[in-house]
Image 1 (cartoon, rainbow, N blue to C red):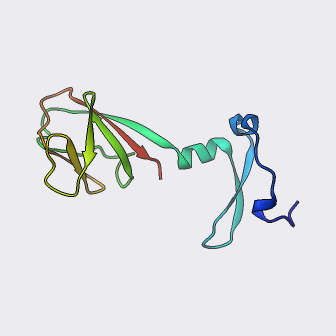
Image 2 (image 1 turned 30 degrees about the horizontal axis):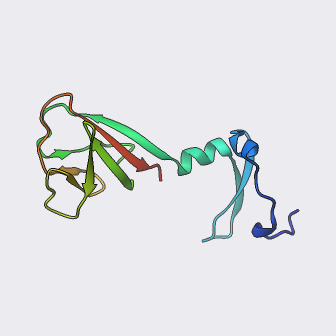
Amino acid sequence: MSDKKINALPSLTDGQVADDTRLVPIGLASTGELMYGTVAQQKKAYATKATVYTATGTEGSTITPGAPVAGRNILYIVREGNFLYPTVSGPDSTQYTWDNTNIGLGVPVSGAGERFMILHNSY
């Protein structure tokens, strides 16, 4: 089997993908290094995560969610049931900015307990 190219290997079945203990080969294109990891490890590495941030009431127009959001790609934010959309500057009431540390809001946090669900990549 080691003489096969990656595109000649058989595909995993749905059952095999659901088996978190199954080993799957991984190749780093930049170095050519080959290794393996379990399905569970790869889910952690490549998954989409949801992080809930609950405001303290002192944030103003900037929230700092910290780890695990810091430095990640944010896919979207829900603020108390309302979607916020990304913008590069000057967010309005339906938008946010992201500098890999802080989320800038168009409308300040209304008070302690306001919730934000942040969907982001884990890598």
